[in-house]
Length: 177
View 1 (cartoon, rainbow, N blue to C red):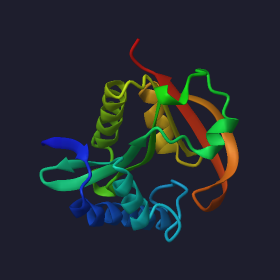
View 2 (tube, helix red, strand yellow):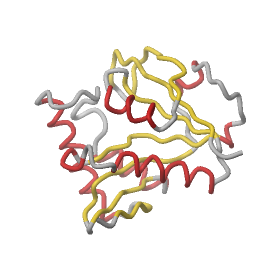
View 3 (cartoon, rainbow, N blue to C red):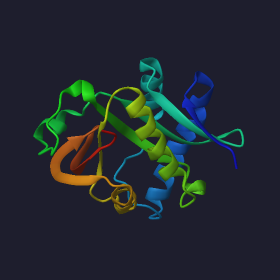
C-alpha cells in the first residue's frame, strides 16, 4: 500500500464528495454515528470552498482518494467558549476540520496516518498547538484522538455547520518544543 497525503486538486472534488455521501449513507443505515446530515454538512460545496482557500488535503492510496481533511488556522466560532489549556496566539494554532475516511477503508490506519500528517504539517507551518473538534456522538473519532494524545477540554452545546443541537467536543494537543 502506498499512501500519499497531498494538497487536493480540482480533479479530486468528486471523489471527496463521494466519501461524504458514503458516510451520510452509513450513518442513515445506522452503521456509524457521526452527527452529520446529508444536504447540510459536509457536502460537495464544503470541499469546493476549502479547495478555493487552498487548505483541502486528500489521502490517496493506490491512485484512489480514500480520505480528506481541511487544515488551516481558522478556529471555529465556538472555540472562543473553550477552556483551552494552552492560551496561545492564534498564529501558533493549526486546526483540523472535517477529517473523512472512506467507510470501505476504516479501521485500516488511514485516520491515524492523516492525523500524523496533520501534526507534521502543523510543525512545518510553525504551529505547535493543535485544535480540533468532533460531535460528542462520534465515539470512534473521540477514541482515535484520545489514543493519539489529544485532550478533550470540554463540550460546547451549539448549532454547528447548520446542524442544530450539537454537543461539540473540543480537543487540543501541543507538539514539538
